[in-house]
Amino acid sequence: MHPSPFMITQLLILFSIVAPLTFALQATDFYVHDLPLLPKESSSIRMHAGLLPVNPQHHGSLFFWHFEKKYPSDKLRTVIWLNGGPGCSSLTGAWMENGPFRFQDENTMIENDGSWHLYTNLLFIDQPVGTDFSTIDTDSYIHELDEMANQFLGFLDQYIKIFPELLENDIYLAGQSYAGQYIPYIAKAILEQRSALKLRGLLIGNGWIDPVTMYKSFLPFAVANNLVIENSELYDLINIEVEHCEQVLSKLVHVSEEACYPLLAEIVGNGAMNNHHKENQEGRCVNVYDIRLDDMIPECGKNWAPELKYITSYLRRQDVMSSININNNKVEWTGCSPSVHNTFTAYHSKLSILLLPDLLQQIPIILFSGQYDLICNHQATEAMIDGMTWNGGPGFDFGNGTFSPKHPWIVDGKSAGLIQSARNLTYILFYNAGHMVHYNYPRRSRFMLHQFIQLDLTSSTDTTTRKNTKESTRSIRLIAFIVLPVTFVTIALIGLIWFFVHKWHPTKVPTLFSIIRAFRSETRNVEQPQSMAPLLLNDFSANMEVVDSETFV
Ligand SMILES: *[C@@H]1O[C@H](CO)[C@@H](O)[C@H](O)[C@H]1NC(C)=O
Ligand SMILES: *[C@@H]1O[C@H](CO)[C@@H](O)[C@H](O)[C@H]1NC(C)=O
Image 1 (tube, rainbow, N blue to C red):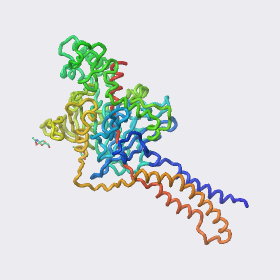
Image 2: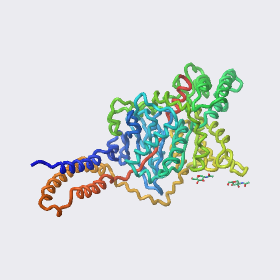
Image 3: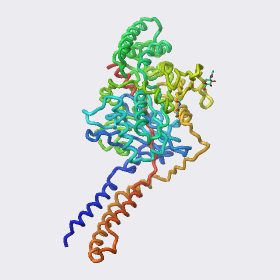
C-alpha cells in the first residue's frame, strides 16, 4: 500500500500542531529543581529561573529569577527588583539584600528574616543585555536608556507568554543606585505601551536619579560627616574640582559626567576615615557605600560586603547554574560586567528625574536612602526633592503653602528613621544604613514595602493555592515529554485506521481534523496547569561600578 498525499498532508498538519506543544518553552522548563544548599525549612520554596530571548539575531537574552511568595495575602503582587551599575547583576540584590536567603559562610545558606517574598512575589532580572547571566554578542551592547526600556518591554512580553499570571498581579518596580535611571524609564514605557500590566508603584533606594544634585552634594556631605574639614587644604583642593565640575554641568548635563569623577575620588582617597586607622592611612580609603567603613585603594567598597565572595563562588558552581537553567558553561557570574558598564553610557539620554513629575501623576513613588551612603547620598536625594515640582507644588509643600514635616519613622517600636510625604511622593531616611539599606536593615525595609503597598493581612482574599509542588511540576514534564509523543503516535495510528475505514464508510466516521481539534483542546489544558506568580529584581553593584570608574579609572 502507498500512503496518499492527502494522508501525508494530514499527518504533517497534525505534527505541526503537536510539535510546538511539545517543544515550545513553558513554565516547567524554568522550574528550579534541587538548588544546592537550600535550608531544609525552605525546601518548599517555588522558584523559576532562566533566560528569555530579547534580541535573538544577536543572541540577546535576559536572565530572571522568580521567587514565589510564601503566604497568601489580600492581593497578588509582584515586585520586580533591579540593581544598577550599569552592568551589575540583580542577583546581588537577591542574595545580599531583599531575597529569601543569605549566606552565613561559603557552605551555609540561611533564611533572610527580612525577605520581601513573604507576601509579594519577587522577580530579579539581570539587565541590560550582557549583564552577568544575560547574554549578547559583543558587537550588540546597548547604550541608551530608551533602548534599555524597550528591551525590557520585550522581555516582559516573553515572560507573560510563559507566566501569564503576571497580568493578574499588581506590579511594583523596585531597585537601587543606577536603577534610579532604569526604573522611571521602564515605568514610563509600561504606562504608555503596556496598559495590560498593572503597574502600581515605584521604590528607589539610594538612587542615581539627578546627577546635578548628586555631584554638588559630595563635598557638603563629606564635611557634614567629618570626612573633610571645612577650609582645610583638602577642602580647598576639592573645591577646585567642584568648580570645574559645575562649570561643565552648567553647559550640558549627562547621566554620568566624567569631569566630576575626581571630586569623589579625592574625598574617598584622601578624606578622613572617621578616625579608623589613624596611624596607618597609607593605601586606605573610605568605603563609598558606607562611610563608617574603610577599605584599600583601589577597591574603596567595590568588593564589599564580605558575603559577595560566597555569592560569587556559589553562582559559579556548575550544579547551581544548571539548576537555574544556565547551560552555557563558559559563563561566569562576576557581579558587574565591565563591558556593559563601559558601553552603556546613556550619553544621549535625558535624566530620569525629568520623568518623575509625570509618573507621580499616575502612580506613587517612594524614595529611600541609607544615612551613611556616600555615592548616592541622602542629602542629594533630599535636595533633589526640594528642587522638584510635581502634582501642582514644589518639594514637600502640600500644594497650599504648608510643608509636610519630617516625621519620626518608627519600626518595631524603634526609631528607624524619618519619613516625609506629599502628593504621591514619599521619602524615607534609614538611620544607620549604607548604600544597601536591606543589607543593614532587612526587616525595616520589608516594613517599608508593606506600608507602601498597603498590605492588608486582615482581609486575606488571595486564594492562591500552593498545591503545585515539585511533584506536580515533574508530572507535567512527564506529560509533555512522554505522554504527548505517545498520544501523537496513537493518533497517527487512528488516522491510518480512519483512512482505511473512511474508504468503506465515507461519512460515518469523525474526520481526522475533528480528532485533531479535540486532541488539541485537551492538550492545551494539559499544557497550562500551572499557576505561578512573577517576581521582582533589585540592584546594588551598579553603584559600585559608578564608583569604580568615577574614582579610579
Ligand atoms: C496619585 O496616584 C494615583 C494613583 O495611585 C492617581 O490616581 C492620582 O491622581 C495621583 N495624585 C495626584 C495628586 O496626581
Ligand atoms: C494643606 O494641606 C494639607 C494636606 O492636605 C492639610 O493637612 C493642611 O491642613 C492644609 N493646610 C492649610 C493651611 O490649608
